[in-house]
Length: 333
Image (cartoon, rainbow, N blue to C red):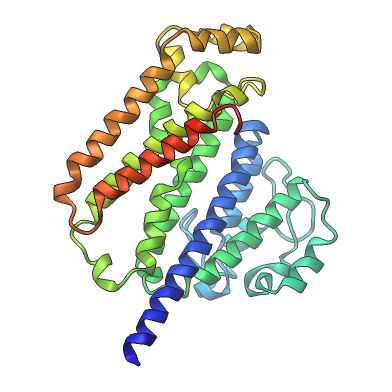
């Protein structure tokens, strides 16, 4: 009977982790649009503050909490700054509207309360996006708190999510000021949008204690960083044609093309969509990106003998399947 209870608990933790990862990915998708297409940097700042705002379950000593760390008191001055003052006049950052906190904290877990609070908000507005971020955050935190490793790894997850959100800021910056595009800097930020590091951390939160105590954690993060880059390259090879009409240069292809002399900044600003696509097709840049993907795959496989805590070769093959799936969807996603 004890084994059955333990097995059920492991399954429940895995289920909670899977839903939490899906909710974080919803935040990722929403902020992608805000950064890549809307280029709304002020809204990105507001969404980041909302995600990391402390709540009642974080404890409240009345002091300021730290910025961007997700910790600190729930009722101190920092919380008020992050949430807005509730007067509906904005939070002082690009006049992003403050959202009343009636559905914040535990109340957001109640569907009826959430629907009632959302009813007065105009769909697709900036206020709606802040409200949606808060709802995602509250539901996600409620799930994560059920995981055995939440307390031990929350600071790691906050760091990983902050990196993902910083990638949205970077996309907004380079799409607003395309002269800044460069391959070297892009490779440091863009892969964070693929969430591999976040998913690893959440899975470790759900795992047994011995998994979190493993000496392989650093190597596992190295493997998952390679996966982040590989996923970013695979996604780029499938989606870059769709991004040209929107003049969205945030994928890995365009910084590399600029570095290779395929485009100047003036070209990206003035060439027609068809001309840009034709120049890419004849440039060899796509083939170079695919070569970079295979180099990462080789690096992952080479690490396999040194990482006992996971099936690295099996994970590498999962990433290969991810690439094949994206290439098969080219032009459709």
